[in-house]
Length: 425
Ligand code: CAP
Ligand code: MG
Image (cartoon, rainbow, N blue to C red; front, side, top):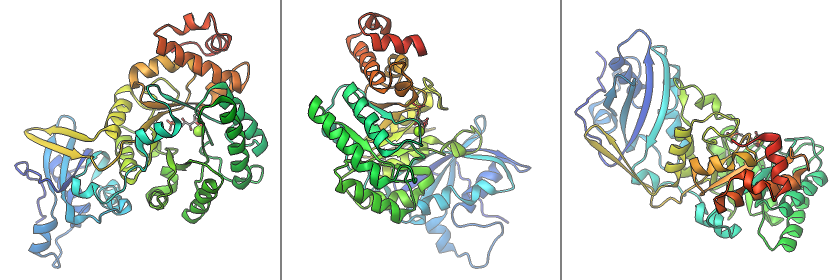
């Protein structure tokens, strides 16, 4: 006789973690599969064990308290005692672990996690958050505009520094490395970082603007630490981490160094978990975990404007949730509340296939409190990287002034060339 974890009358208490899943069972009823998932992700196993005692069950048994048969979704309330504070790997070994491999499931997707305030307190959250980033760059009321230097890899540090200077003097707010550039023999981290920072200092002096650089420190954790200190020593205010490939532990390690540097989270590899609507882990979940740990900015998609996956609804929901202080969600009669007061908001980064012609649509869908990044859409400009940066700023000005890009392009050659090449989204 298996322990039944389904209790639709159960009302979660304020101290439980609520996980929402989508699921397709394989040869068992939906309810039975829900119950087995609750068991495997907490205190149970496939059979009754003599070592289980009533006190464990009383304290730690989770409850499947909500099922939507039509959508094939359900929610589990997990007692907080199942989890170690401040340990995301442990959380994911529980509710994002064995359950994905169970034979009785055709598919399973972790859609969302709601955290009680007591759990949230175990984390630092972003060191800067949206306000802190804007203060550092001294930019308010418009999206922050950045570039990823292209080609992704292959350039020398000197070549990269020249491009960084060009885009900075062309009007962009920050420059970053690409996700697969770390420290290769033609472009050592130690050589690249000082040269790019120097080039940006020069651009700052000339333009009077602040310009950031996010070097990609992704590597084994000990090497990431060395690189973060090295970048800080040379004056960098940012670091970039590929959060999925570096892993939860790597990211927590870096954040907990509390270095006084803005952490840019690239999500390379996320789609191995997020792309299937039936199986895996949603981007919303990944983004919320990243906020909890404390990234200041994270790639969330482009609301269907650019080249990567991510619908308008999905992108905007993630943006909303990682910015908010307080989230209320209704499950039937039950109201779930998440308090993020102690955790600063994370800014959403839209990137991937963007060019000046996409800016109005992006602002229409995601608003102005975002970071926009342009790789190909800057360096692919017919006049080169500097003109590409100018075209991006011109498109942004058109949005600010409420005129069309075509109108603006009549007076601005760089924007005209960009929309002649890529069009307007
Ligand atoms: C953008 C980018 C980013 C993607 C990743 C790239 O370059 O640097 O890695 O944005 O996608 O290499 O593709 P382009 P996401 O502007 O040239 O496309 O932001 O969805 O994680
Ligand atoms: Mg990239």
